[in-house]
Image (cartoon, rainbow, N blue to C red; front, side, top):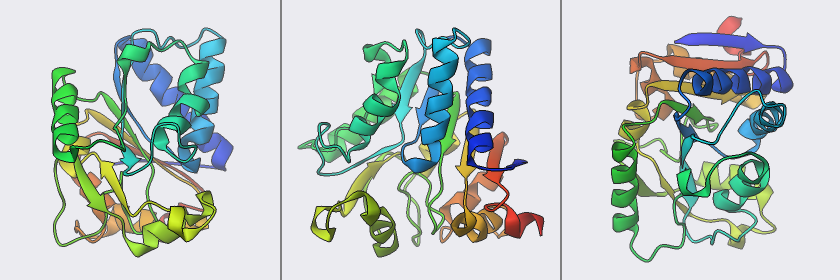
Length: 243
């Protein structure tokens, strides 16, 4: 693992955007795996600026999103589809046909998951996968469990994850209890992986991701087995690792 410790959230976002820009410069039709939420939001702002300054071109880039809440329509403001379009896609020169998002209101989850896997394979794997990390070590929505699903699948969210996500919803009844996510195997097949973490509450899980034995109880610990992972963490998130 390559560990980059930066001063703060803004520096984390800048460094992540630079790595993505470098990837696209090397390969114009790069396949990117993209994450959502507050952690990568600053990275998307940086990439928008780079695109508007003609420093990075998304016209041939292909994207696959990491996950989606099950039961939320693309028009729902809390859906990850809505997030991606409003925070990133509509601001850059990416082609709509090159954007791949999971359908949170599909009537056939198994078919949706298989089609998504087939599309990723058809694109010859993901070149660079961006990840955040949950307080419990989940990547995507691969929650701690006895075993981990390798393929894109429907998952029941843990109480801890539901609680962590509650800040985005008006009341507990609105919070989705399930999500569709890329599996651990799909993530691990990416050629490169960037994991972003900021804030004190991520310090313990980052330390466990880097130093603990590989365990399904900390799904992110499996990243120790990948040959090209970069963790970008601010000083607070890295505090237990560097102390």
